[in-house]
Length: 137
Image 1: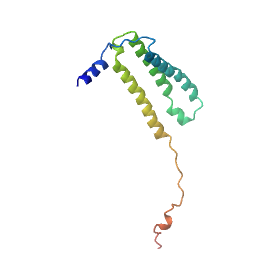
Image 2: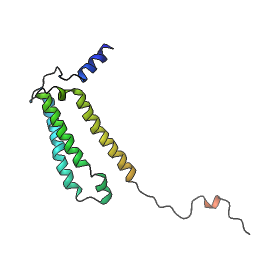
Image 3: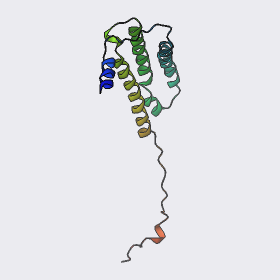
Image 4: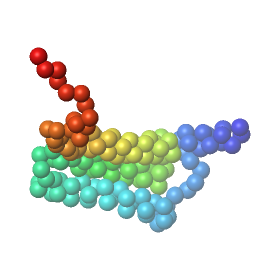
């Protein structure tokens, strides 16, 4: 029980105890991830130009979400390193990760729902010889 209280105290602490600096490997990895999201947003915009209509419709929000998730991540990194108290909460990182994973999950579900293949049915079913025929009048 005590460890759970300590976990929530750390999660919602406006000024976490761990000191971070710009050359910390975790901070550099987060900078790389957020930078890749921002650069990826521009690459997604160029990539979408050659897509078909149904794929274009599915991917219309990808570049915008990628750009804003990268910018919000950079804001959270800078607030953590510069010790801006209310934005340095680890809980905001949890919300950021939930939003990112939730967006990917929703896009996967939409892709599966909208991109399906209609299998043509033959006129004669394989069970037709075994079914009772029509009554003759």
